Image 1 (cartoon, helix red, strand yellow):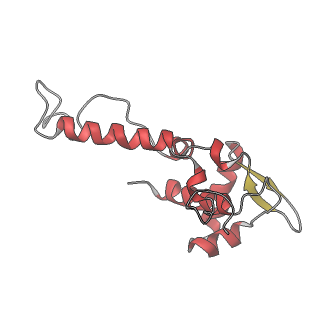
Image 2: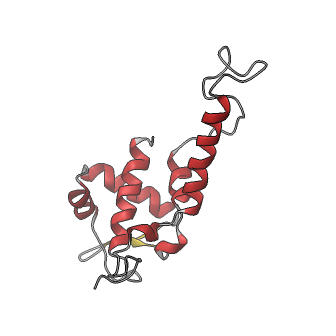
Length: 144
């Protein structure tokens, strides 16, 4: 569903959301990679891109690391998706020309287009707050 870069970015940012405390807790690329079972060089590269995009802030030197640049509630998954994925803005069927797109749509055209639209809508409506620790009432916040 997502490319490797998007997967690494979502995994890294979800980890930073889990420890978010207004930027006091910093995690290294190595710690994020270890916690998520990812390759450290890839995580470091992705975090650099995320910092350039303003989604994370980095602190260099001993005790440095990465933290979310904004509250998890202010970062939607679409912010991440659009950095690493090519968005198809055409109205053609996912099957493309020759099968669909010339004349009437194929049998799956509307169904697949609706699924794509729903997927993008979910990314636009879902924030990193879904990764915050949950409280005893099941809502994001401090775990009890």
